[in-house]
Length: 277
Length: 313
Image (cartoon, each protein chain N blue to C red):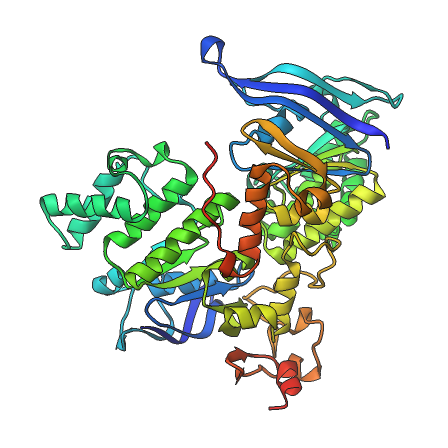
């Protein structure tokens, strides 16, 4: 397996000087080409900040305080990277809420074409970019892409919007896709279709996926390995099937019990695990 | 206790066009019982909730509480008896009002208690939902998501309702917080004898909360019955497809393998016959022409021609 991304000892701090608080600490991650790493944890566990550190989109109040972030280069070797330089064609991101992540005033085909123009090294004309955009829309399973390219985000259903967002993320031909709760806002039926699409892209394009979610059921379907975050640290890490079958860390066990109780019958109802501090 | 009979809610959209958001729904609910309403976005489940709480006017049909017909969009005592817990507690709580001020205002406007009695009642409500009394002097932003949803529940309970309608009330919460809020709703239902209508797109949560479940598709209930029976042996192909699509920890399958193609059709232009037939894996000719009628069998009611044939009734 060839590693795409390797993170060692990542720490993220919020605030300045004496008020600085370490919200992510000592995080190690590795994603290979064609592999999906699931990152689970509750709100406030630091999973989103970790992803944002990887893609260089930390909020202004936060900064990387320690650690190495390395991404695969053209020579196949891992090297430190400048996120601004890689964003789009090396690492791209699919956000949770397509309605807020898409521009409501522009046609979706144009928005994808913008990504094509921004992401490609070689110059492409607007017309070529539009054609590539329609090709991407076909690849992500949007029916009748030429017509849909002229639609505005509000004219599309939630599932189609999320497909547009994935097409946009693919527009720079990235090698790693960070998916931050990409199906949380969707119905189960549409969620299943989108998960199927991401899984197909992973195999067809040998994409690496960093898949963030709080839903263990989703993780079980899409990921090969899993990293469980709690209070800014990775508390458990391993092959998905093994971690879910036999969680070692008490937090993973409680997450699993909560999910199982909701899935199964109510006789083994949850014993109210505490909220994240 | 709560009875809904042949309820229709139509929205007018443009010239002479109507969306049949709720199209002939009949449901009933006893005190202390919980009924889950599930379905995809746009199936009319939220409109149903709004109609019952009087937030949208009903087009036709009947809503009755303890046998008395009520018009929730006109009648204040009716709105008091049916209360709603909303999905997003951050958006549905006034950020500028302290929790205590909000609760006291509700209690006095509805003429339930005055002065120091209202204060005492507000304190009781905090206890009821498991928050400290000093929460009354704080504003919504000082609480976590789960705590805010407790405040949302306290607000609904402030006017002493008989029916609580929870519209995606735990969807925005983390799994462990969901479990805590679900425990709370369950306890309130038993202790206060509340009837609970629990609307959710999350079939797992509904299973954990509800005695009975109604599955909605395009404005109509396609199947309803006791939760465990319905989950163990869904009779309507739509129920089956929905259940198949739920990602589970213990059943690993390839994502995208649940065979429910496409998305629900527009309620502006519903298909003829059975509304589900264009997506249905087992549809036969009659499904495209004739609307199926609900058939009761084994404590469950399903509207499906094929299921009817299989039962041989």
